[in-house]
Image (tube, rainbow, N blue to C red; front, side):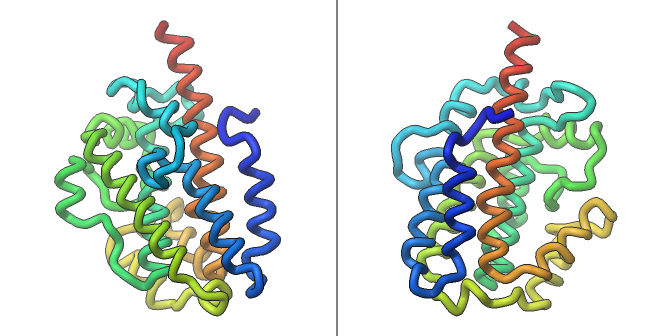
Length: 227
């Protein structure tokens, strides 16, 4: 069921259709930025208030760390997971540069982990969710979003169709963005098979859409239970 992002799936299908067409590069970049702007707080795009603002603005600290059912995660874990994956894939894989996350950010956010959180147990998800200083974490997420928008504007048609260099994939493991656990390491193979367009169509867009839909659903469940 759809709780988030009316019209975003259709826009994403259109992006998929045009993203590798050199003559439509500017249109594709514009559409990417439009979709991406709706997946971050509006301060990132400078656009009008959006669904992410609505999701986050009235969340209480404890609600970030509630697991609605045993099959779910927490809102804090989802936001961590999508932010770390966007940071790693856009800055290292697409841009060949440093990720935003570093020891300073880890300290500021009070995070017990560096990686994407794919292999965490339920107890570890709760621990992460309760540990994070949410205000600092949201600042990190905003920085990730702003940098993605900068990177997109620089891409040429040739860049879009380029395969991901192997050394960029290995850097993610070396820097602790992914762990050797089977629930984490598979991501490296998944990303290695993609070109830049394939990355743009998943980690910073579709992946986020799916997870934010869960967050909106869980928020309703949490409010239903606790009020």
